[in-house]
Structure formats: structure tokens, C-alpha cells
Image (cartoon, rainbow, N blue to C red):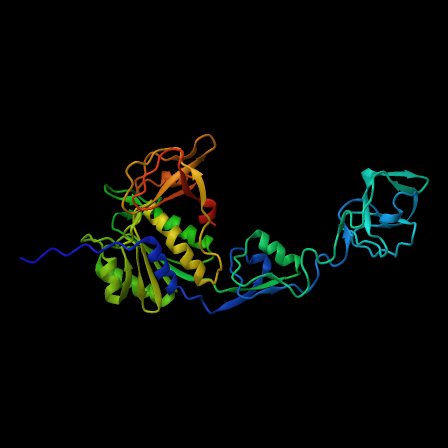
Length: 403
């Protein structure tokens, strides 16, 4: 009698992530596009400032530009300097009416805010001591011409785009968007809006994963739902590999008789990573089909979400040349006991509770997507680690993972 096949050993998450990222060679292609449309893209080359910002010393307040040494006297106001105008030199013993952002007149070295002045017969006097440099924004204090404003690998968010605009960049050179072919497997899956036969479920993963991919700047090739048949799965993989850099699937990567993705990938290409020691999300796979990466996610919605966030997200960011891949975690007190930890690394859905620390969603099943909607983030718990309420744990907010 032949022995039953041994279960494969589970790869620790950190080892799986190292192996996965080693395969994620940044895409070589890049494109130049309007900065206004570049949100979420990854900068392909350093952005160098051609100008000093601000381009000249200017006023940080509405008030009066003066020489600090003269400010205790009553000074005649000899000019008015609104923002955008070119001031005249300021003579000794003079003051200039000035507004926020206006260029400082040559000769002035301080600004007295208007609330700290007295006006009488066209003359102004400071009512408080004035020091050189007071309320002056110096030329180049934000950006200096020739310096790097944003380094290559920067993922362009609202602040980065504002900084690029500050340097006068109308266009930016970014890495090409990864093309990701997405499909789900399962005869039980139907789309929202269709009748729901007995035993069927709506395909939530298609919506979740597509939104996550688009949020990461990917071009999504949506191949829909593939039937649970080996030949249909192989055909879908061939089509996806011909069109995409990455093939991303959900479902069908376990070891059941109706799970055809693993043998289909092995027939069309190869697998180099399968089964990760995490909960939820053990049946995770990576390999190649032709030149395309294959990534197979579990079918359960929370497992699919968690494995995408901790493994696929950094993979796709590295493909785009992003510098920062790992989300920041924070040490926060747990508001509950966890006496029976799993042998695998766990990602618990938790919310922030100002009174007691992190609160736990009552049902941690991998099929309960409500837990992720309710949560503020994930508690990253090491394998076999029990803790009590009040112990500090690692919390990763969804704000770090869903953007």
C-alpha cells in the first residue's frame, strides 16, 4: 500500500516575502505625463528643482518691512508692496507696507506684523522689539535650485505632487503601469445583479481586488470568472500571460479535487512558492506562466484581502520601482486576551478603542468580510504568541495598507 503524500511545509511569511520581492524586477519602461494626472504613480527619475523656492526673501505676514535697527522710531511709509510686485530699495529710516508673500524690499531685514504697530500721520512705529529676520521667509528655504526635490521611487501622493508643482514641474517621468490580468475561479460564483442559485455566492473578490489594483496604479485586464475545469483554467492562464505582466487569481489554489489552478499553472509554467504560514491566507501561490508572474490568492474574502495587502501590494510597488514597500506598524495596547494563538502568523481584524486599546472583531473567520469593513487595521501577531489585555502588540492601520 502506497503512503499518503506528505503535506508541504508552510513557508514563513517573511521568507515568502523576501522570495517574492526577489522576483519583482522593476519595469524598465517609463512615460512622461502631466503632473496633474500622476497621482499614485511612481517617479522613474529624480526631480531636480530648477529654481529657488521662494525665489526671493518675502514676508510671512501682513505688516511693514523695515530695517530692524530703525523699527523703534516713527518711520515714513514710502511704498506699498503687494504679493507679485517688484519692490523698490528701502532707504535708511523708511518702512514699506507689505503683504504676505510679497518680496522683501532690498535693504529691509525684518517684517513687523501690523498688529504690533502704531500709525500716525503716515508714519509707523513698532510697539514691540524687532529682530533681524523676523517674519521673513528666506530665499530657497523650501527648495534650492539644483537640489533633488523628489527622488526616483517616490510614490506620488497629494503632498508629493504639490511639491513637484512648487518646483514648477508640469510633467513627470513615471514608471509604466503594471498590466495585471485578474480572474476568479469557481462554479459557485455569480456576479451581483444576477440570480443567486442554491449553493452560489456573489463574487466579492473581483470587486475588492480590482479596486486594490486600481488604487496601486495598475492597468487591470478583467477576465471575469473562469469555470472549475482544468482546460478552461489553462486557457485563461495562456490568455492572461499573453496580455499581462502579472496574473492575479482568487480561489482554486488549495488541494481539493475542484481546485485546478495549481495543476494548470504547473502545466503552463511553474510554481516556486505555495502555502504560507499565515492565518488567514495559507493557500497563497507564486510562479510564472510564460513571461508573466502568476499570483494565486485564496478564495475566502478575508484571506484574499490579507494576502494581497501583506504580499501582493509590496510586490506590485516594487515592480513600479517604489522605494518604500513595507507598511508602518505601531505598538499599541491590546484591549483583549488572546490565550490560544495559532502556530501560523496571525492577522487579526481590530479597531482602535481610545479607552481600552485595540478591540477585536468577534468573528475572525476568513469568510466574514464584515470584520475588515469594521476594522481600523490588522493586529500582526507572531506565531504561537499569546497575549493579555494591556500587552503591547503590533498594529498596522488600514491607512498604511489601502493607499
